[in-house]
Amino acid sequence: MTHQTLQERYQKKIRPELEKELGIKNIHIIPQMEKVVVNAGIGKAGQRPNFTDKILPEIIKEFSVICGQKPSLQKAKKSISGFKVREGQVVGLRATLRGRRMYDFTDRLIKTALPRVRDFRGISLKNIDEEGNLNLGIKEQVIFPEIEQDVSNVDFGFQITFVTRARKREEALELYKKLGFVFKKN
Image (cartoon, rainbow, N blue to C red; front, side, top):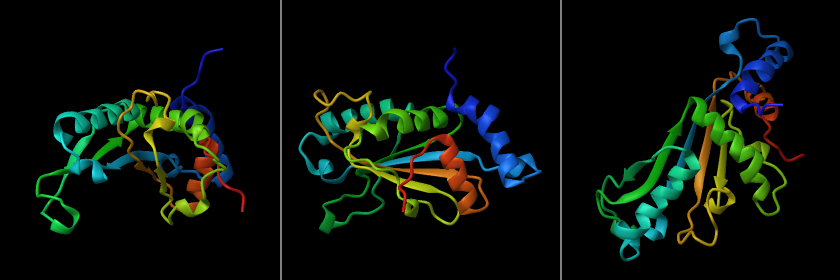
């Protein structure tokens, strides 16, 4: 038996099920994932010595391995002395995943990364907004098997936003459940 990707499973199984269950006649309004946005803040690591020489390239490398593409650097728009931030200083990383990379990332997150989170009992339903977007916060990048815990020198967390084309929160929730996301039971 061949391994079916999440994208193939969505096209062949999940999409027809959603069409039937939600009673949607127009195929263009069936709930579908549009993009996944992954953000990571640099935080206090940006104030460490040799940040631009050693730490930043390592964070970019690990972030790229996790996302499957090189992130864009988010720079400070203006200096804020209270936060010890200078204008133009790198304060975060962002990657927007679409298409195959989006489905591959989502599949790895659901099947390998989230089960490795200690005391994971599911995602809270409060993480889904009214438009059907799911927001997750990950405290450490080492939950992904591609990152070796012993080798990694820098710990950083990141936020993941799953953006859908769903019209209602309930439709998006149904899509997420069929994709394999595990939610907490109230």
